[in-house]
Length: 169
Ligand code: SF4
Ligand code: SF4
Image (tube, rainbow, N blue to C red):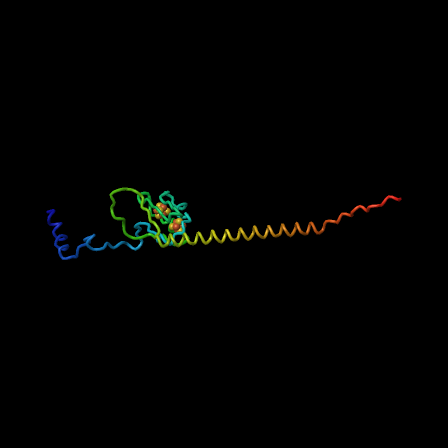
């Protein structure tokens, strides 16, 4: 009796296309609003750390000087707060899941050598500009002090010399 209930479905399914895909032989199709994982355009990152402060799971870290951005995907809940807070829009949620890994260590993205060299040049240019501005300010203050000293000495009254009187002979 049971087989009679099952037979119509089995027969009908023989003429329908499969509902499963042969992933990974063919790409998986994700629902439009599915959340996969967080990705970054690391060369656009300015190392401001706003994403680190926004993350409710404390799973991010940033090293501005080394040009690195690190995420521990095992702690990330893909809430998207970091994406919302990034002022450079360099974070985004990418559909699809991470490939399985052999360990649970956090993943670090590092800026390209070209970008690091460019930022180093910018830092040097800013430091040189600041040093030049500081030197100009110091020189202006020195000049002002010299002029004030000159003005002080010009304003001082000339002391009258005592008149020599010859004794009467
Ligand atoms: S998606 Fe959420 S949990 Fe994941 S790194 Fe961003 S802020 Fe943290
Ligand atoms: S918020 Fe954006 S720009 Fe700032 S450190 Fe994070 S990823 Fe980089």
